[in-house]
Length: 402
Image 1 (cartoon, rainbow, N blue to C red):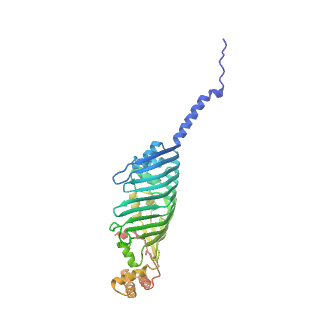
Image 2: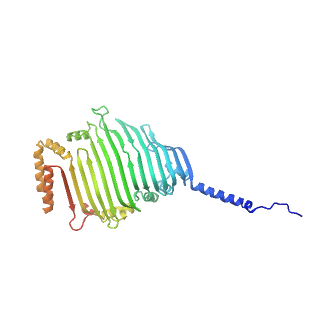
Image 3: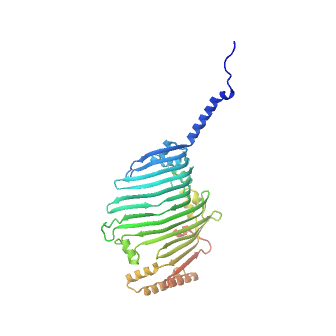
């Protein structure tokens, strides 16, 4: 009897197996990388906190499921669960076009948040285009407007580990670079009426803020920060406004610059420059060399960090003040209160500094030089620099509290 069955070719016979493998591979890929969109996610109001609405959450090429993302952003996850989910998360991009916090008292809106390169607690870039809002109080509105914020090289690893373990505060966040385009804030003085002469609003603004840091693993190597034009203008009729007016100011306009480096081998942290400056006031700068700072101060638990800092010491300290008008205004103000001539008050202070400082510091020759320098500055206030170095062993932090 003849067999009329067609012979099955090897490629055709392998098709079911190939299809099975392809399907399994595709399913695995989908499990590892999803594009998830969640619309109108609302966190209900709690106690005094307003409800929070995420207009849309877009996760591109993420390994988290819709359920996991919903749990994370809805607030349903505990701190430990949230930390674990964030650490687990991988995504090419997380985008949230709008977040609102709103109730009958006011509304605040965060616009165009995006994070890229999300991977195991690290974020390549995170940006926020703006924050804007208003809240009603009994005697006026609080308004807030923020410019763009951008962060690069975010590392959340140790902070997330502390969240997961329930030991919040043990971890630290690393930031490679942070740029903030500043903000504007108005808020009423609670003791003043809106119709008070000159109004009742504090006006506060910041022109910009930048910060940068470099790291050796979890250990900081160097860092710097700068804040430009932090302006505080109190209501003219408020105690703060009247106090400034008595000194000849209607507002305070200050800036800050700081930088520091950590030497892991020498276990020293050098604050190379910490300077606060004020427009028509002057600049107060510090340089500090700290010693015996163990690396555990940056990597340990909260208790270990505190112990490591307390074991540290101060090797040297330098203070510099460049006067640009504040000293004269202060002398004039106090002279008026004491009903003395400003020049007479200066001479009085100068004599006291020259005589008293050496006595307070034990009559050391260096103390006599310090007293003479301070007295000279009081008489002609331009620039003064005071440098202190420990004799022999550095001064331990615990010596300041004993």
